[in-house]
Length: 266
Image (cartoon, rainbow, N blue to C red; front, side):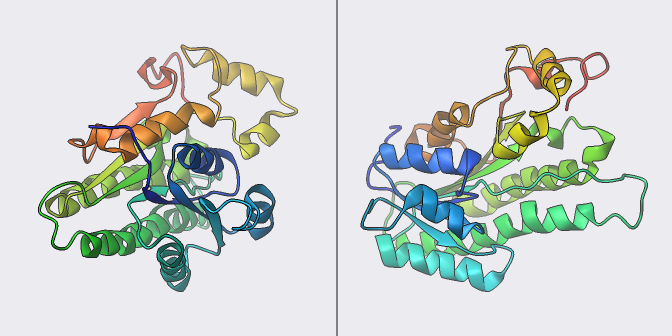
């Protein structure tokens, strides 16, 4: 088995910044052809540039909650690179919600954003992977990696909607893994804790106490950088994890092993 991504084609959502962008650049540096997808076309163009600047990493702008956008993303990827071998569902949104307010629509919004968009794209990409593998009797047909969160298992009341959406994403991972295993497509997830994304950086900019609290609740004593996730995602996407499917791998600096009573998750 090999960690190599050379010659593989990967679709990576949430690719305009933060974790998705870091994964995309890492994959491209490892020899993969990468299609980054995000709603923020201006940021994608700024970060990636034109195909003439870099043929191995391109971008597609659109709202992945729309079925037509998902179909167009797959078509653009196949047009550019002839195939798709890897899907990284890295697009996610975090919002606070009121767990006691029946008018709060946070759960519906995050289920649409964090779960259903990933499910629809996974289903469509899996069909393409199955078609590509027709006539092949051995080898892996594809790999899907979902980016989840330890909030699926450890949460705070104001993260009700986010926790529900990531818990559903974990179960989606297991269910698709079982359904796609006969087609030699693996589906796994990476559940992480606090990562210094653009949104978290903004949230902590004027709140030193919040940063100290997060670091104090993490045995390794720091907030992860987006680059801390990239090689683990590479492992899950590559044949190095060729006999792994349906797993939710945790990467959180030890945060989720602490007693939730004395060391609450954030």
